Amino acid sequence: MLHHKGYTGVVEFDDEANIFHGEVLHVNDVITFQGTSVKELRRAFIASVEDYLAFCEERGEEPSKPFSGQFVVRVSPELHRKISLGARLEQTSLNAFVTEAVQEKIQQMSL
Image (tube, rainbow, N blue to C red; front, side, top):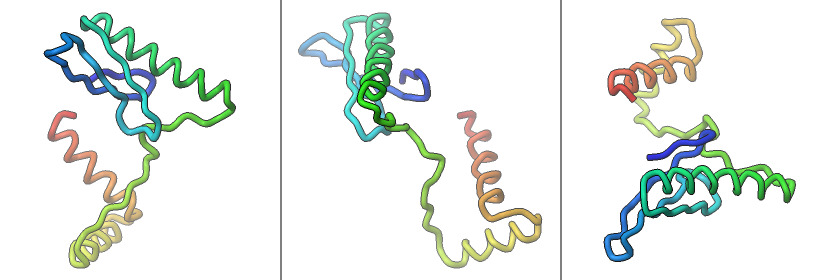
């Protein structure tokens, strides 16, 4: 994966065309790039993100952000009760309690 200004690109190799091609993930718009070497691919990825941001600015539009920082999680009523109780016992918000639990799990995974 490639990263630039908060955007992430994923890459595949097309054996028939002998070329790498990629797409920026987690945006509402389509942003693609391609190259024949890793160096060329990185340059194309960065150029595509920069072109996208410039295009949005020219049009006076807000660029699509990869993540908003909000997502809905569905859990069982029993787990919801336990999370709520845990947050209350730690005298913190439900959001802060869940955020800390997720951060701990991500650290364990070394992401």
